[in-house]
Length: 207
Image (cartoon, rainbow, N blue to C red):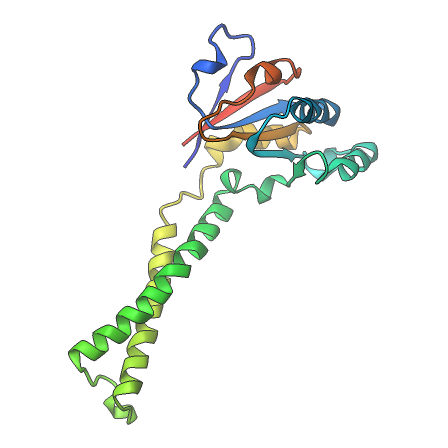
């Protein structure tokens, strides 16, 4: 789970003192976003993630849409707000469940077969199944248990986190342009360049 909080751009606290990895930089228009990405490219800034998040479609002009389409996937990566995992708890839960099921279901299948072979149970003998059939049924039941396990595991993600994300959601609805940045391991975000970018605000996402 991520908790968001603001840092005043004029605060005397240095950005270098902050041990944070994911940040959202808020801009009033797309031009300033593009300028920031241009500076990153010029300075060869290496980031683990740099995504431009446009505002809701109702707040985007035709000129901005044309500029976004022209620059997207060339200068930067662009994704809609609802497609960003850390900003969409429901999407986060869905991805977590899918990731968990990829290894829990095969593990459950193998464990089910192993259990059936070790115990020599004949639970489904009334179906006229031999040992192989019993083992396969046991494997399928184990696979089903693995799937249920993935659902239970993903349930740990709180999908009702709109209160924590409200400020970011409001910026998106108000027509602000968001830039999601994540530093590489062992490196800091280019705070000096970000401070010069005329950003409206910076929101840090702390795990």
